[in-house]
Length: 247
Ligand SMILES: [Zn+2]
Image 1: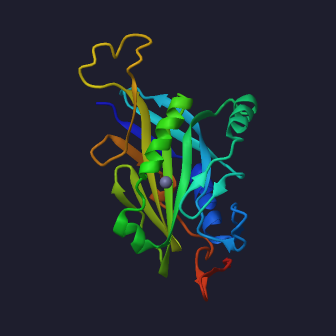
Image 2 (image 1 turned 180 degrees about the horizontal axis):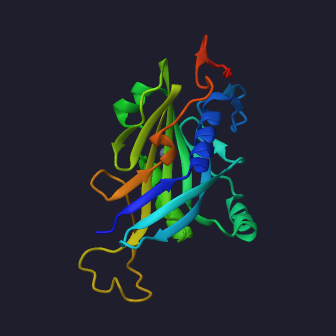
Image 3 (image 1 turned 90 degrees about the vertical axis):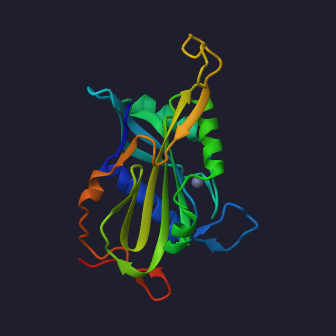
């Protein structure tokens, strides 16, 4: 059985955490013009870049090196709609930085309180997420993995050790903010007993995804093996306002 290892570089983990935090804590005008007030706790969206590596033991490594944030995405509290500029970004990167391959996408799930996440397993991909994965794979066969980062608040700051929820879900905490990262593999498969499945140009391929505990997908974030906090970032002051840290 092939194992799939999804490894997140320190740079990519930093970019994802910052993107999720930015949309969570910094007030932004809602894309919906009728909503005039500034909003926090919004979702965000981006694309993943890196390499697919076939390992000598037959397993496959997806090395996620970079995240590009979709700055023009329509961000809501319970959804995010990617902008139409993503194909341009893909063209730019493949033209000027061809050392990175397109691997898939990333989005965030903001929740007010960490217990809300635990109660309803808010770190899982939603039904809408799964539908969009299928569409993305249909539109672009290079789409291979999807990541969702869930972010929430803790009333009491914590620096508990990162925790593995399942092989493909890791949870960690930056003081008053708790994160979960969940990885999903998207691939073309076929129904059992379909004898035409391996024929060239077979049209019976179906798009499948898997990310549950029983599947052989392993999420690895080297940074989280031993994160060190250098300043006091992540502590909240007063009514939930973020404060900058001191050395
Ligand atoms: Zn989602």
